[in-house]
Image (cartoon, rainbow, N blue to C red; front, side, top):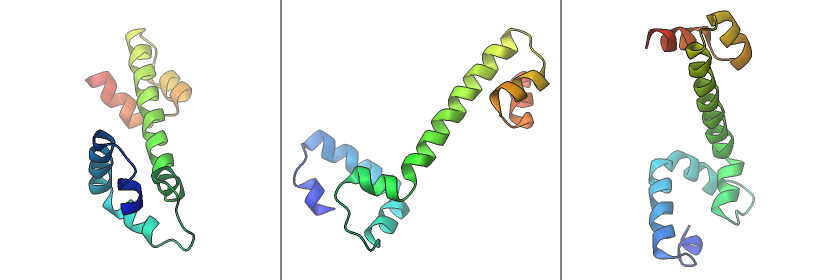
Length: 96
């Protein structure tokens, strides 16, 4: 990781440090890979970190859509069908 840190600005380096500390296992897995890693982006992609973050983003979007559908008075079954959210999560939104 030192090769990345030497080539970045201080603010970016600080942000990368936070990411690396928060996701130590991901970085550790990447460092053990057989193929050389060329960038932090590649590390994140190869370890599945990017996919996990994208999935979280998709779920957030679905939750926001579900909230709007609840406000429109649509039934739980319709919301679950439209958003692919877990029915329990949708029920929690109704109660919240």
